[in-house]
Image 1 (tube, rainbow, N blue to C red):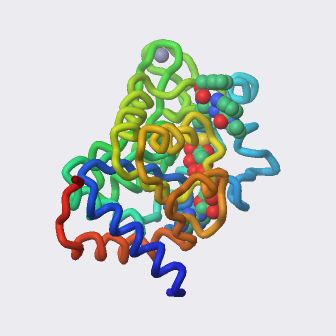
Image 2: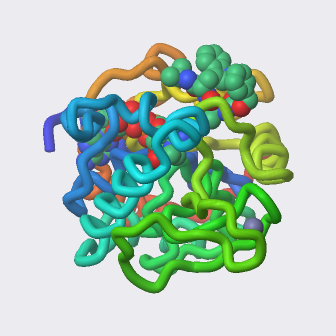
Length: 254
Ligand code: BV8
Ligand code: ZN
């Protein structure tokens, strides 16, 4: 690990060792080392369509079968996928901190698979099928090529994710804002910080006085506003960061 990287990890661990209220926001990048392509990297395109074109209520209304196929393809790709060391490190992080809130933009369920609990899923869950007509919902147990219909009212079923142009699940955003604006430290992992309102959480946290730590191999829209930037893959640095934090003398904030 280069000097600059070692230094930024040590700096981050020191901030965390002083905190008892920590919020963590993750994006597609934390699942990259599990083999799931990110959105704005090569993974953002599906059959020549940008995710923003497929993941919308309009696209579903116009061509439900196409959108259904898009999600079935992503579910199929997820079946063999396991959480990686980055997900595992966030489970350890929660055990190190009296008040730790994990917030994710991801819909892949890997934080749950890794053992994280109480995760605030801003953009829903790809494994849920739900009906916009009557609110009926169920957890998909496998794959189904054919578009499903609601057994209660007959409307086409859609995946339980938040599409572009849709508001976030009732209460989830409010709890995420509460966690970020009361945290002493906010760790932002694996997101290009482009999608709103998720991308504003770190700015609101910073305005409320939190120290912002970013973990991302690339520079992002947030990097200029982060106090500590760790330019490395999450799976490579989070285990070491958590180990340093765990071994730091337990100093509580003054
Ligand atoms: C809403 C579910 C009210 C579906 C997704 C204000 C300004 C401008 C636009 C808007 C605005 N307010 C609202 C909007 C519109 C829109 C929006 O943000 N548009 C964008 C294009 C600007 N937002 C909405 O519509 C939201 N709804 O606000 O409702 C409203 C509505 C309309 C108008 C006003 C208000 C709903 C947005 C939710 C969309 N649903 N997902 C699905 O998954 O199919 S978003 C989708 O993008 C995923 O959830 C994904 O997680 C998310 C964010 O992307 P990232 O996670 O950041 O992924 P990305 O690929 O971009 O970046 C990955 C990063 O990882 C990179 O930086 C890379 O360097 C890094 N990385 C790679 N490898 C690693 C790594 N990092 C660490 N370790 C590694 N190994
Ligand atoms: Zn229904």
